[in-house]
Amino acid sequence: MPSSPITTSVFDLFKVGPGPSSSHTIGPMKAAFDFRQRLAQLPSDSQQRADTIQIHLYGSLSATGKGHGTDRAIVAGLLGWQPETTDPDALLKLLRDDSVTYSVSVGAQTIGIGSKDIFFHKKRYDSPYANTMVLKLVSDEEILAEEEYYSIGGGFILRKGEPDAVASPQSVPYPYGTMAELKAQLTSQQIDLDELLLANEMAVTGRSRAEVNQRLDQILDFMHKAVRRGLRHKGTLPGSIRLSRKAPILFNQAKEMSQSSDSFLIFLNAYCLAASEENAAGGIVVTAPTSGASGVIPGLTYLAKHHFHYDKATLRAGMLAAAAIGFLVKHNASISGAEMGCMGEIGTASAMGAAFLTRCAQDKANIGPIEAAAEIAIEHHLGMTCDPIGGYVQIPCIERNAMGAVKAYNAYLLATSGAASFQKISLDAVIKVMKATGRDMSTKYKETSEAGLALSATEC
Image (cartoon, rainbow, N blue to C red; front, top):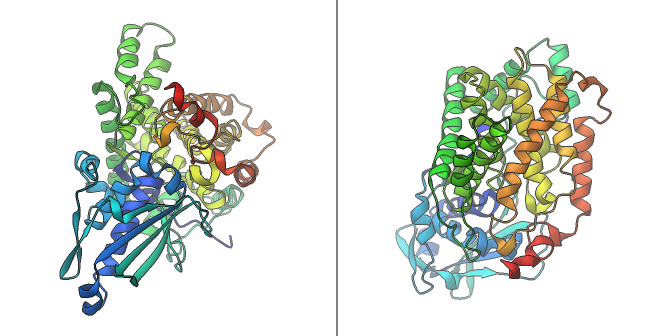
């Protein structure tokens, strides 16, 4: 039995929320909402004495928080907004005027909060994670309440002093923490991959099989709505770069070339750009596994549904296989750009996408090709930097979603060529390499916009 089994829900990995960044938008919003809930439980005298809420941002949240909308997300969370039900247009309007304050409920009283209460610290903070935020309830110079939160990628958060909330206390019927352990369970229990993942999901969430399937369908619907919106919306994206949307142009080009052998690839690029551009605009997307990588799997699943005509059951099975790969990376390395660089985001999404395509192409789950496809996809993203221009999830992020999906498709082709058993590198091994590479990578290349393409901003 694994010492630390994976007990993450599929629907913690695939989360609905506003763009542009799960670690900088969704995670901070959830942390601020949690802080709001804790303030409501304080003694009434502390609530009455309070006059300020201070927000302190460190690491990558400080370096690129402005471009990612971290300040807006935290104010939204303090106002009681939650990611899945947030109006993206209303979110974009927050903090447009530095003189405006917003009324935050602290028990029976309200406190005004605005730009002046948010501090982007450049100094290094002694923290185990790159994305750190400290929220304080203050009366004059006295701190009445203080919590430290870490946004660890994909919208997952931790609170200092608490165990990983994602690692739920529920036991699962088929525990595994590595691909080797997953394969051992499949063999020893004589169970199909789909059934194993469904059984674990039902144990973790308490949902029935029908409820899990319904939620998978809903997640796919959210993804495909983002694609369709992105194919319609034209113009420029928010921010100082003034980047023009490309998805509608590419989509029209694909339709004109429908008889060409290249058309399906152009369609795939259009779908991925569409969802990623919606994310960059602050629209509602699905973390897959992060918002910055939220174009890869939506593009691939949209292609699978509308071009390959897979049915709902096949798409669900593919999504479960994709989730299993995401679990393994998150559990044994990281899906955070601030921890791993872009290989943690696009690299993981590409591996998940390769697993999705491989599972969908099979009549029955064969773990060998699924593992091979995921390993190939990660292997060819090793060392990829996260260096967004201006701190916006636009350049190079949007095109990287399309490139990650194309790599996923090629990894699927290589893995299903009949030579999957010839693979010399296991998925577990490449995830270990990924973690080591992320550890060795300079912080300048991990979502801080201090090096790489971010330094070419003067050309944009």
